Image (cartoon, rainbow, N blue to C red; front, side, top):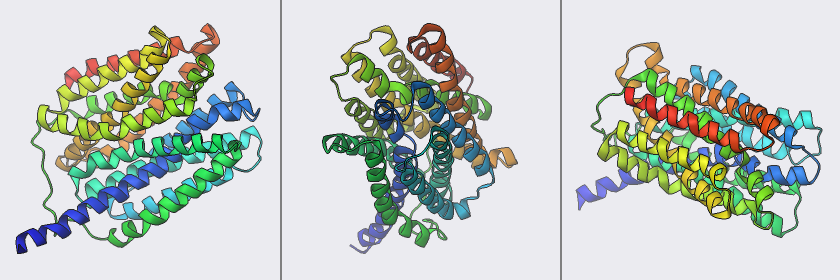
Length: 388
């Protein structure tokens, strides 16, 4: 009984830490970053943004993410709990600002700042849970936070639509919910920020053959480019092709499939290894990205949301723990900053996505070529994975 009782604090402490870190990603990524994808069509309908303006705001967000990743290169695990709090404060502020009437350039600027805080949430939550708290087995729940945030924000926006709210009211609703989530998550992170789980929890070590660092970095950058066209334009594509279907529901499918997928991909990579599972992940993701271009229909949009939503955070769930293992094994500065480098190249890929989509849309007047090019990037990443 005493041994069982002794394990309970350890299990609760590890679960609580993973939940708190997941909430940071739900706020910074699910709400602060990806909720824009679902609100974007409403802002276009209200005349606040044009299609070009919306793409510009998306690019600014990804550029902000890139800048945040660069700034996070200096982050240390011991200060990650403070950065988690700053990411929450910044995200709440950005969501609140977007509820105010403002010109297009101001919207673009705020979206850029939101991207910066998104990158900060990704790096800080990962560093805090996986490195500082040394809770590697919490990775699936951590990255599931992104999908949970996407799904929750999407359904909140469906509710906002039923309530007759315009985009300003939607942003205000998201701001209020993220504030509540932040108040729930931040105190525990701050209180436990100076300590690790070592005394309570024996770190779980996954027996994996080490992978090569630079192919992993390149694969991660291509994955950022590969998924982002779908993640940026899926609700717009659905609204254009199927105006009677609420695009926010399709976006919710995207988020709902992302949350459990993190656990499935983590289990698979534990059992079959990083290389095999990463290749399968990239292949399925490429198929999901290409589907609406190859066979545009309601079914293909739903399948695309399921496949891309069910794989894009799976890529992070596979690649980030692999990067953490490499970082701990490497004595060089590059090894120690590998998580930030991975976030940086992911940001580069995401910035490139909307630029590529805009260029191809100007030539072909549709997004099919953009989706096929993004799928090609994922297939290239899968080929590079042969070098891991």
